[in-house]
Length: 273
Ligand SMILES: *[C@@H]1O[C@H](CO)[C@@H](O)[C@H](O)[C@H]1NC(C)=O
Image 1 (cartoon, rainbow, N blue to C red):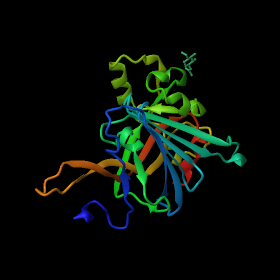
Image 2: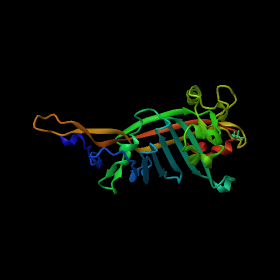
Image 3: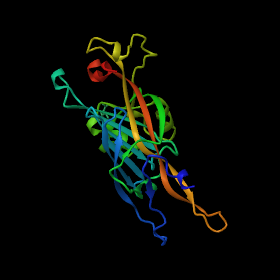
Image 4: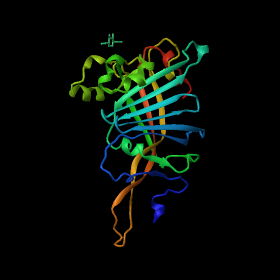
């Protein structure tokens, strides 16, 4: 019976719930470090933080190529932010690192609530984890540039996350429409060219000249994150206990961002893929 809740080969993460019997509401802050196997087989240490008062979750890990990926889910504003700090190639005239920020709407049930995340504990911190469910790749055409100074309106986390990426903060037109309908100031957005309006615009992959504009692709994968709560049932004498939260399901999900760059020099990784 219990094997339904413990998936084979994976080590269980437990939710410590129900330990507080007093109806006191206070904020939980927590940090959890999990060892995660990346697609290339390398092991990374992923840091997951949750703040139930700010109602947000952050997740950070280093890829095998040294790129630091940070993800924030801001439940207060229903916004998610991806940041990639990509190590530059100094010998090719690049900066020490290049920062990219992608902002888009957070849907319901994409990730577990911050309060549950803050209570997540692991029994075996040395276990190497792989997600139980490997989800596909979401394609995002992020052809709108966001002005950092004004982006506070979208989420209070943008400033911290994206100030290193000043010139490279992007979102989707569909998200912009949604925010404009909710009274956000439109002057922070600038629509960038897309392949559909610029027939000559090629993907950076097929652009030879480093100073030509092109359509850049950036791919990342959140290799392990708690995507769902699992419920268990206490078996009482009648065989019908109340369900309670007893763990999480982990997922992995890929993201493929496409956006305009004024010159290929800003998108050199598109050569290798
Ligand atoms: C961003 O907004 C600020 C404040 O409105 C403005 O001063 C600045 O020029 C804008 N930056 C760009 C790149 O448009």
